[in-house]
Structures are given as C-alpha cells and as structure tokens.
Length: 208
Image (spheres, rainbow, N blue to C red):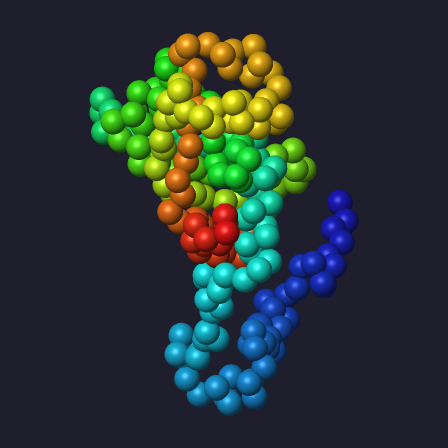
C-alpha cells in the first residue's frame, strides 16, 4: 500500500519546531495605545452617568396626564388586612368630571376590605393595547389614599355618568347595593416615560 503524506497536514518535527518559533502573538490593543495608557484598565477614568431622575418638565407632565385620561384599568397595591403583607389587584380606573382618579369596588373584593381600615395604596397605569415590548412603554405610578363615596353623596350621579362613559358594561351592576365608588387622593407620582426617561411628579403636576 502506498501512503501519501501532505507536508501541510502532517509536518515533520523539524518543520513544526521552526513554525512554532516563528509564531507572533498579536496584542488585543495596539502597542502604542497600551504604552500611552501607562496604567491598569481598572484605573481609567469613567464618564459620569446621566442623572437617573430627570427634572420634571411640561413634556413629562403632558405624558403623565395623558396616561391618566386614557387608562381604563390599573394595578392597585394595598396591604392585606389579615397577613399585613403587600397585595395587588387589577381594578377599573377612570377620572371624574374634575379629572380626579376614581374606581368602582365590590364589597366582596379583597382590596375593598383592605382599604376601608387602611386607605393607603398605590396605583400603576400603563398604555394599553400597545404592540412591542411593554417595558419600553410609558407607565405611571401613583401614591395616595382611597376614600369611599357615601351613597348619599351629592356628586354620585356625576360619578356614575363619568364612569359609564368609559366603562359601559358597568351598567349591569353599577346600581347594586354592594358596589361603591372610590376616590383616590394622590400625593406623589413617578413617571417612567421609556428608557432613560424617569421623572418624579407632585399632585400639582398631574391635576392643576
């Protein structure tokens, strides 16, 4: 049997030693650049990052107010009265004729039972029906307190009218004795307008 040997695939030991001796190790960075630095990379000055919270401007206020006007649902955070643990519910959300946040609660809901003794709560609003990454969409966090509207409140008819304008299906149960309107008094807010666009807002920024 005749065996063929390719010098490139099967180099001789002498050729292999010669090849290894001629190898050149190239640095990842150009030598002049490394020499000019003269210090470890960990000691190089880093640029100052942009402030995480931007100054509140008219554009931020307009975006936050737009979320308030268009949101029909919200995530509601509250304290569970039995365990004292944080809890959260998805609720209907709307504005009354004065532009203040409201909702309609059932007595059977856990958040109703929680907010009567402890009205402290928080709300999260976001753009609904948007395609793409929801984490890239604007969202508004609200901190405040919930107040239950009495059945004999003079503003109840207007509340019902405003609610049905954005929640027409509520007509089926809005008059039930175990359903009650709630007004939210907002003390502060936090707007995430997208990547790198965060703002702190006051109640005046949202409602004045």
